[in-house]
Image (tube, rainbow, N blue to C red; front, side, top):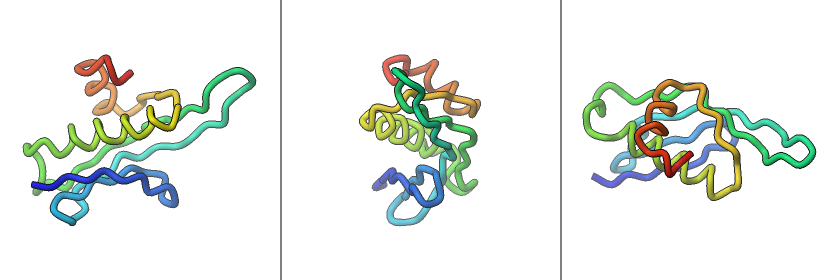
Length: 94
C-alpha cells in the first residue's frame, strides 16, 4: 500500500491517503507564539476510516503528521489520546 500524509491547511488537519483514497485525518489548531516561545500545534482528534483499521494507517498518520509539524519547528501539544499514546511509544517524536 502507498501511504501519503498531507497538511490540509485550509481544513486545519493532516490527512492520510492510502493508494490515493483518503483514509483518515488528525485535526489540529495552531497557537501563535508568545514572546520567546515557539509556535504550538495542538492535536485535538484523530480518526481513521473503519475499513482501514488494523492496517497501521493511524500510526502512519500520527508519525507523518508529527514529522511534518516538527520539520516546521512547531511545539507539539497532544490533546488527542491517540497522538499522546503514539508519542509515549515514540519519545523521539516529542
